[in-house]
Image 1: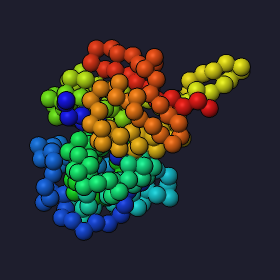
Image 2 (image 1 turned 30 degrees about the horizontal axis):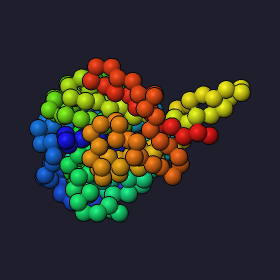
Image 3 (image 1 turned 120 degrees about the vertical axis):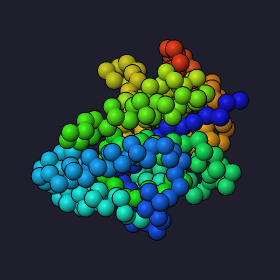
Image 4 (image 1 turned 135 degrees about the vertical axis):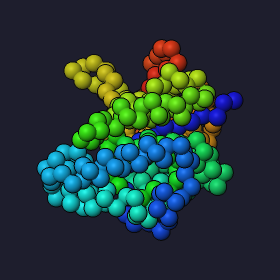
Length: 261
């Protein structure tokens, strides 16, 4: 059985503060990304010295939050850190509920989950990182789109991956080439709803992150390395694996978890 990797996005919300060493002095899972991170930080620092309107657009935040986000980004190099699994908050990470997992499963999460980040490229849950504000879909002046910058770098980190569960949204998926994985499993959650007297499948938006957190728990617990193992996945909201909707193209298998509404 292959050890599955699970790709997750970071959260928009992040815990403030920290009591760990600055990221440059802390042990990281991907030390070979240090130079690339420095390049992004340099470009970000320069961007944080532009007009408030430009900064607001780059960071994807409203005018009221721009000043705080700017100050946070300018302190990235020296700010205290905390493990990424504690830094990232929000629906997906609440649903994963890492602290409630048995020690053995937390260790699996630490090894098998990789978070794609616009600033850091890739981090594992225990990696110490400071607070920051930067989306993978952002474009920095004179630097370009972050997903384009990270794509060859992150792809090289996943060349030897046997099985990858891809729970990334589109802007993060653009930061790597899934063809390098032995098996790439892309998951979607859909609702089976009635519209105009017909049953239709509609992509889930509101519950999407909540459902992904639950799926991570299932994969690390079962060590599922094949979509067919999703037949045992059950969620309180009623989402179950529908084999008839599975589509395979090359190394990528698209699977659907469906709930009837």
